[in-house]
Image (cartoon, rainbow, N blue to C red):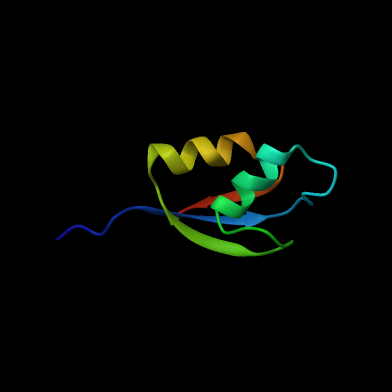
Length: 62
């Protein structure tokens, strides 16, 4: 069985003084503290969330 593709997302920017929807997106990704890293499924929904806060995160494909 094929393994689902994942991406690693690390928060590099602070949510302080950001819009509420951007803060909520970071929390939805599991990134509510600086330098926190999460391994997430590579789905269109996750990619859309990452695009919204792309200036606050670093992405590594796996």
